[in-house]
Length: 203
Image (cartoon, rainbow, N blue to C red):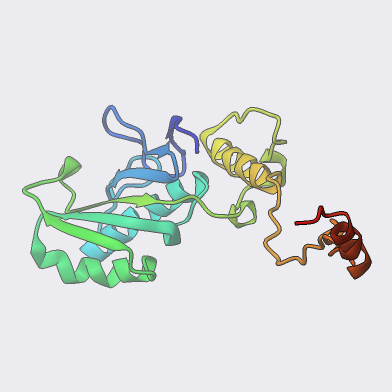
């Protein structure tokens, strides 16, 4: 398993408002930074808490998709609210995106960046098969090529691991019958025994 850590950003989601990346790919996980209700151009989304929760989930989904994963591959989600009075309204949108019900924490905080009422972060796993990635065919590289982006690095790592597994020697555990090729020890015949007796000295 690779121990390399890669930062990842996509123009399809709101850009970071501080010294951090949209996501970090480390080992078998993708760690997505908290997403606030903002467009890819950085404009805050107006409307209800439901509308703003939708914007957070869409931003999260776009990052995961371009990083080689999917929102359905999330294993842990953390939701930050500035008021627990918005808990039910947030959940009404949240459950439509996270239908597989990953583990989750929901925390009430005093305030959030840009004065937004909700922020969502997540930890996900990459897709298991390259066929699950919604990547144009021309972006795939051969296993001998070094990846040129974080997304391709994720795909490249999975391709390499699949190849190494396919090259491992197979162990045949099926029972086998072992034939003994050594001839059995022959017992002396009666004639041989008599010849030995006749040559014994008299008592």
